[in-house]
Length: 207
Ligand SMILES: [Zn+2]
View 1 (tube, protein in one colour):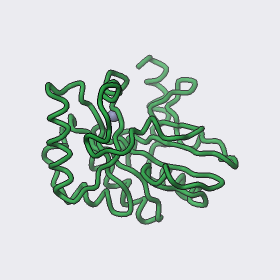
View 2 (cartoon, helix red, strand yellow; view 1 turned 120 degrees about the vertical axis):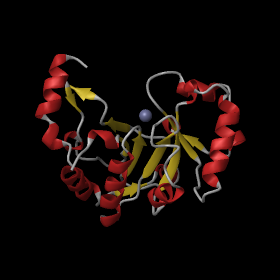
View 3 (cartoon, protein in one colour; view 1 turned 180 degrees about the vertical axis):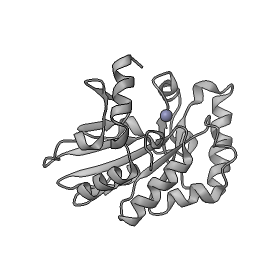
View 4 (spheres, helix red, strand yellow; view 1 turned 120 degrees about the horizontal axis):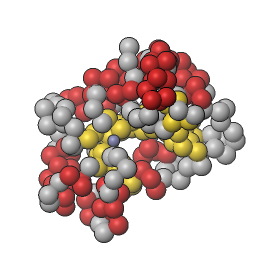
């Protein structure tokens, strides 16, 4: 990260609070906000989906989930199999994320020796706890997307890869605009016909 971004990160610290995230949820609640799964099927003047890639901070994800539930917002939570929280997390935590929402598989398969068998066994294990995983998103800018160039989603009981959803606007809190991390406050007012995907990483947010 360059120096200006580091400085702005400190300056912008106060913007990335759960309170501000809650204010954002209030602003978009008048639109049709659905899980990534439902985003494939719902048609409306404006349709918004919030995708959370849980790269590190599961505790923050739970706090965000509580906030969303309190406001009646339903979103998708992609759990990362290479994250430190992944193996030690009890199933009930992921099942909580699924309440009124959706849990997906955050793919970091480039780190795995036998990705096919790993994916089959992990999806089986997760689904046997009651999770209904049909979506996947790729972690990082590396080669994780490439896995789907040579494999069919269907073969793993999956239905969509997040990049293939049809949206005309995409915002993500790991993007930088003028060296400031993108924040939902920067989102222009949705226009009729908009299908908007918003990527939120819980680890960038705090109390
Ligand atoms: Zn990620």
